[in-house]
Image (cartoon, rainbow, N blue to C red; front, side):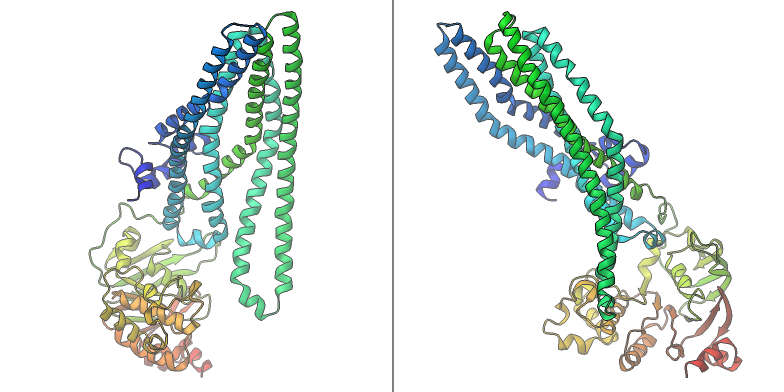
Length: 601
């Protein structure tokens, strides 16, 4: 564990990410209480930071007193004036020197606490995103999630600094100024106190407008972030169809909308700050005139004019600081709520407390399974039945939208039946801890998914202690040997973002090798050979035919010639299995499968 982690880790034993999620759930609708809960175990660091702040600012608070006393000594011709000047100079010099180490400690304690919460929030979001259902990720734009993890967490960190440190610091400054002033003149103190209502009225009058503007701007930024990611991913398609102008126009409209909402937010913040500043500057001028009048009357000493003016400036500046940070507080509270949209989502894959599997045979049985997607009443599967024995290779064929991919997603555990039962080795899959089941599962999706890294890292993803022999066995089986030999860095060649340095067929073969190296007992192939040329397809198909032996395999393929060796073929139409049998049996039947095969000739 790193030095920073040791310093920021709170005392006691509790899981930070789970605690953050639980805090959101416990104090839902109360962003300030949520914020307080996020710092459990680190409150003492804020206390130490405030103490250090008090010490480091002592030189600023003492200076008006020193200045006033020297002026009073000089004007009254005090015989000890020189001795007092030397004492005051040494005192102020010592306070200035001690400011340096105190400022370091103040920053250290503050940063440890706030960065702990910032990191913990991001870790909690990452954990939650790994728990949320596939349906949630399909519906939620990735750009919005990215904005919450980066922009909103940063805003919450800023809110924390303002809430727990800046406001406390402001309070300390005001208290010191009022206490010193009150000890010298109750009349001046009452004048100071009357300045506070003006600040309160100014802040309250703008608060609701600012909250609305911040929310509008945050939502617009999230939407724009999502659109930018989509635009970047679509660049090849856009360029290929000469649609650069149209895409630029769409993004320009989006960016102009962001600018307009940002402009309205900037204006309201600027007006808010300007009005607050003007109000307090006017009060400061009044203070100068008032204390000057008191000095003429003899109610206060001449030197005290400087003291009161300095402390009134302190009060004015601190209340102005409250006015200034209010937009940041509003923005931070909005971001706390924005993060809660993810952390409070109940659309998660529940595995806790469910049956853990020690081993998997690979026997499946769909029993009257029906399923439909959220926000859509159309049944994708209707009373679907399909028995699959251990080690069988089942090919699913049918027109697009028939329900083939939905069946694969149910095998993987991404979707659960609305009615009916899917049995895995006799266990209702809805009662199984899917994490223990998926250790025996390998999936090759229709669109290969690679991450930035080397070919070796992509193949061995999720598998530890893989020997070179096992790695090259998977490479050979996936027909990657010639490609690896042709690359200068071999398996250590970087594939680029999303595998962009490889061709579509090469990316798919890397994905196949990744599945094979897991030595699974269940294989899901969703048109795994669709991106391959004819020669590579034949070699891969031969390898797959050997490797699926004694493994339960589900294959979706549109090219019916690739599933001739499947043990059984299920023809799916309108969410039901309308034909089931071997290749030869279905061809002899001259039904739906025969019709599809004749079309592909």
